[in-house]
Image (cartoon, helix red, strand yellow):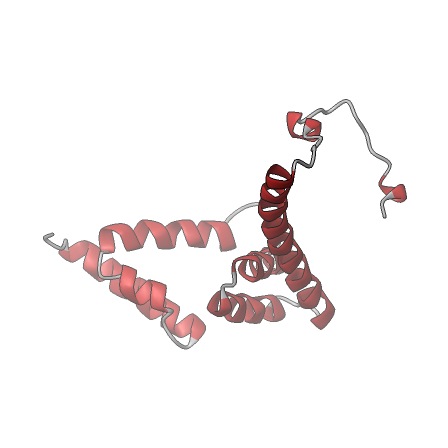
Length: 145
């Protein structure tokens, strides 16, 4: 594919900004920058998600990113977003809670898949009515175990 010189210049500028911000260029950016036509929109979306307008402040966005990275096992993402969260004022406990949330979601996902299969194999009857998205049922969370 023929590279557009204008896109190459933009990609190089983005790479330099990333290097200044992080002190290094993440592997994803290194590889994707070889295709500026894909890299530039990806970087624009990332910037919009993490720095754009919205109701979540930078600290909360970074804490969300830590949870997501923990859930998917994104070791390098955890490193980057943990530093962003700390820089945005996150406490040690807030970071730990974010990690715990992500880990719990990952565990629940694994259990959900595995236990559905288990139920199928061993004939365990399941109530899946909650999947209907009923909005007329309000649960008292104070009685949760």
